[in-house]
Length: 159
Image (tube, rainbow, N blue to C red; front, side):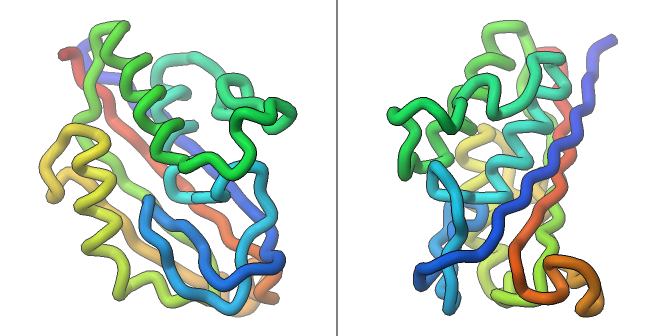
């Protein structure tokens, strides 16, 4: 086949802080996230989608939280690694679709910046990256404001 698709999911609980990283963009928020790296759920889910399409496990296998090298790491490093793994195997991102799940922060105003940054990191046109947000209508951990989650799908095409 000349295409592969992968799905990724990530979640982080809120903790102390004054911002969250989403799609490589610093988004002001009254809380941060509890994470070993910068806790960017968008990039983490996207990495898992790429790794899934390649059948190479998940982000924790490649960047274990037990490894001190990744403490506070910029998640774009993880995304670059996943893109390189794809390229080494003859694959390139075709498009990506990400959904952020949270009541707050408001994601919409930051979507254009996230799309531009993710497109650059993936080596695709900005219109090949979709970032959107939804709430859970105040249900579950995201609805109670306890954390944030993201789903991602990435299509890989033969390079």
